[in-house]
Figure 1 (cartoon, one colour):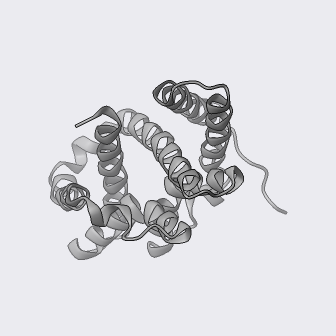
Figure 2 (cartoon, helix red, strand yellow):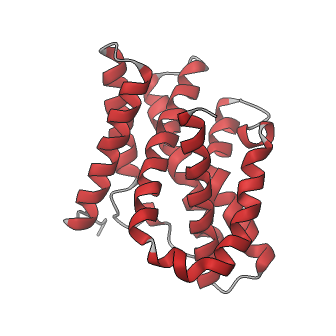
Length: 200
């Protein structure tokens, strides 16, 4: 198992946990929690693959994603108090996850011969739209529409990644720099309470 694949699976696990926790707040049943975990973890990548014409979509080709999501519901149910205490750790995994998913979505879109601007959008979709579907199904205003610097960090990271690749940096080096950049943006945004201006 290579490093990128391992982080991808960890990111899927963390996103699925966030789905279960959101479903728990809304008092969903076990089936509802499983559905929310699933769409949170793979919704963004599924939407990206459908839009760029990559079918079957990614999770259909690797059963490990379904196994991880399936394990998330009982793990979160029985250990949710401990998980909630690991907010800082979860935050870091989430930041790493959106950084990696942004890059994977961007690279996959470029591989289909689409314009880099489209690739930036698809990278952001990969990282963020699972959370959008989660919030919509839970009847909550999606996080990325509430002024939070989240999707913004993804597209900024995507642009940085493209610039680094134009400089002929190795894939792994550009990826690590981009993920660190996104983590820093997310940490600064939370600590300094950066918010996007509201439409009034």
